[in-house]
Each structure stands twice: as structure tokens, then as C-alpha cells.
Length: 347
Image (cartoon, rainbow, N blue to C red; front, side, top):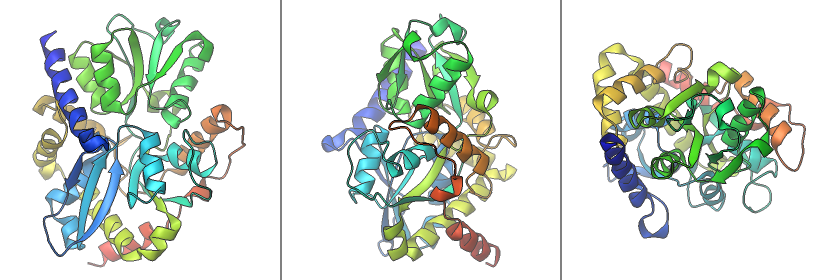
């Protein structure tokens, strides 16, 4: 299929960039002001970055004196281990990754006392279950190979829960680790034997263009689920209060700006500029997901407490070593959002 080939080339080019210099990273400067304070942020590709991309384009980071540099990670294990090692200041990641590494259920070894916390939460990660063209139901995945970012992290647990709700357990399928969402899309385009995965917007739309099926949206299957969050080490945040506050204020301004109807064309252009393989029609659909009143970007950037409860429920069920995790407030500190929201409203 010609469109699949072109899409695969675009995603492959992006992945080549992320592997530059052996660091699996594409670094993008989000401010050109020489006097700005550099802030390094490691994130995943996809529409969840929209508030940051908007904050760059509209100068919200620069106005806070920040030169935000994004690195796109190949997988959660690389992201979290490098954040904890001090290579990056902040991470935009799945809520479950914070819980996993904080609770000793991490995919890779890390130093003791990870000291992680969440200070903002922007969305549910816009998750969908996507399959190869010949598979049209969850039940049809029995006996097949499914791909995940990492075996012990949240989206793998989301996939396992969905399978169970449709009468399949872990032994009914084979799981293979393939890394982040762009990598999993590229993998499914290249290998039809890898038949399904959890994807985040806009990659499910890109898959549909290649003939894949979007079998379901996770929010419709599981209800509230906290996806993308901003995290850092508490010790780092305490020592860099001004940077965390500036980042949070710019994030709030970016969210407000992207929701304004008059800015839709510009937001869609930002998507085309920042997502390899994105087209204007896919950007239009992606904007609809990002601003959906029932599942779009959180307008106040406050983590969804019920969504965190669902993350903890799944981690208590599938995570190892076994733990009963019940307190969503254990991982979140709202002070930065509260102070940022007040200062933004007073400006």
C-alpha cells in the first residue's frame, strides 16, 4: 500500500533522528533567547505534547525566561532511568511510569529513593487499541503477537485489562517489547505478524491510513485513566522552584491558547510541523481528539484523581512485586498548579 510505505518512511526518519549519536534522542530547542535558562524535558512523541509546542510557538516559555529543550525517548525504561540519573530536569510521561518507579516495580534497575512526584497532568494519553487489517475484534487477537512499550508499565497493563474483559488472558497472546508509540507503529507497518498494540493519538489515525483498525478507545472501555503527566524529582523541584513555576505557567497558557476556536488552524499547523507523517486532514482529526469536551486536554492541567485510581488499580492487579496501591494523592503535589493558576489569573 503506497500510503503505508510513505508513512513508514516518515516514521522511520523520525526514529533515525531519535537514535542520533547513540542517545536515542531528538533534541528540540523551544526558545531562541540566549538569555533564557535551559530546561531539559524528556517526552514521548504524539499529540500530548501540544501544550508544549504551543507554548514554544507563542513564546510562553520564552516569556518565563525558559529555553525548553525536548528529547523524544525511545521507551519508558530509557526515559525514567535517564531522568533519575539527572540527564533531564523534567519528564512528560505516563502517570503509571511515575508510580512504577516510585514503588519499586520498575522495568530496569535504578538507584534507591527515586524521589519522583507529579506536578501537572494534561490528558488521558488519547489511547486506542489498534490492529492489523484482518483483525476486527479484540477476541480475534487470541493466539497472536501483541506489542508493548515495556512489559511492566501502564499501557501494557491497560492492554492486559482490555484482553481480560474480552475473555482473553495473558497466556492467550504473546507480548513483545517494541518501545514507544512511533516505534510500535513502524513495527506494525513492517511486520504484519505483530497484530495489535495500544496507540496514542495521532498514531491510530496514521495506522488507519495504512488499513489498520481502531478496535476501541480506552476511555470508552476503562473510563477515567490518567495518562500524560509532568514529573520531576522532588529535591530538584525544590531547588528549582522558579523553573517549575515558569514551566507550569507556560503550560497553562498553552492549553488555554490551543482551546480557542480562532487558533484551530494554527494548532493544526503545529501538529503538521511537529509530527512526522502528519497531514492536514489527520491534524484536523487530532485537534478534535485533543479538544474533545469528554476526553481532551485537561484545561486546568490538574491530574484526574479518579484516573490515578484506575492506574493504581491496574498496577495493584498486574504489577510485581505485588502491592496494594490505594492513595492517588501520594504521588501528586498540587502546589505548583495552584500557585501558577493564581499568578496567571492575576496577570
